[in-house]
Amino acid sequence: MIYPIVMYGDAVLRKKASDIEQGTDVKQLVADMFETMYAANGVGLAAPQIGKPVRLFVVDGTSMQDEEEDAEDMTGFKKAFINPVILTEEGEEWDFEEGCLSIPNIREKVSRKEALRIRYYDEDWNLYEEDFDGVKARVIQHEYDHIEGKLFIDYLTPLKKRMLKGKLSDISKGIVDTDYRILAPLRK
Ligand code: NI
Image (cartoon, rainbow, N blue to C red; front, side):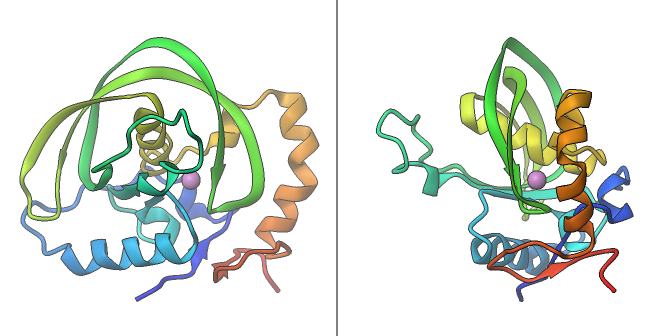
């Protein structure tokens, strides 16, 4: 099932999401989230973006592979992260242009640390502790922010934010061009 994607301005995107009770059957939800993400050509999707304030996100960076010749190896970077905890973040901060399915048609450079260690469950409730760096870490950091109620635009300078104000206001009213179904909080 493909869910509509919740737009900027909806309170669910600003909530700190709750853990999912261990052992809960999340297979259908995970499958639906992948389906929703692919339908919108995203590389990551967090549960709050489909209106569910729980600690779950999915990523699939394998499509980023062929976009740039010097891109890092994204093979196997298709995963569901359930009740994840970022244990450490380290390395130099680096700029990378981020976008978000909940904030369509806006892309801005965000600076974040280059590596992280994360503990999470997969959809079968197997526990993992893994290290990621580069673009993989970046995708995880962006999605992890979603379950903490944070958005990438929170990192922008006050000036940049001011410049985006009109666009953001339009997005929350559903005045935005997307090729996927959206749910805008202030749509009349
Ligand atoms: Ni996002």
